[in-house]
Length: 181
Image 1 (cartoon, rainbow, N blue to C red):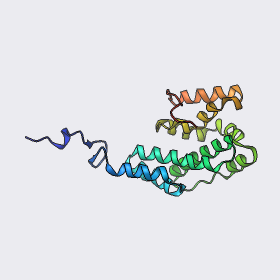
Image 2: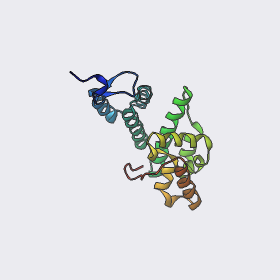
Image 3: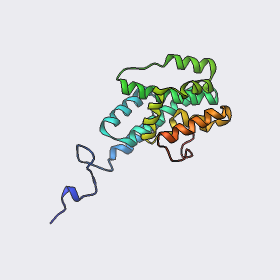
């Protein structure tokens, strides 16, 4: 007798629909995401991927959104600031179902630079929740705390220690070396 669908390894049982684990369209979507330069399209891919639980697609879109913001910045620390703002703005917008501008932080970044922005965002409860969700999504390298650890020489020792403790608090146990911030 033949195997039933439940015995077959090619079906994903975590989804409400049975779909093959290696969806041929995912490779095409991942390629499109890696070449996309439109933040609105990337945010839409993130939204759709969350609905369909396509975590690989969602993470690729977050990383590309971060890369676009990185290219928009001027100096190295400003690049980090733009990347962090893009990711956090997307997370806030998706959790609130409305567009969040973060105008105050963009002005702070433009006027004072990336170090001042990261110092300002470090202790805020609202952004700690977003950092926690990013760690849960295995995107710890896109958090405020990871950016501070990556450029520790530009921050006070107590800020670096706070960032390290917060990442531990969020449950992050890995290394940041896979993706350079």
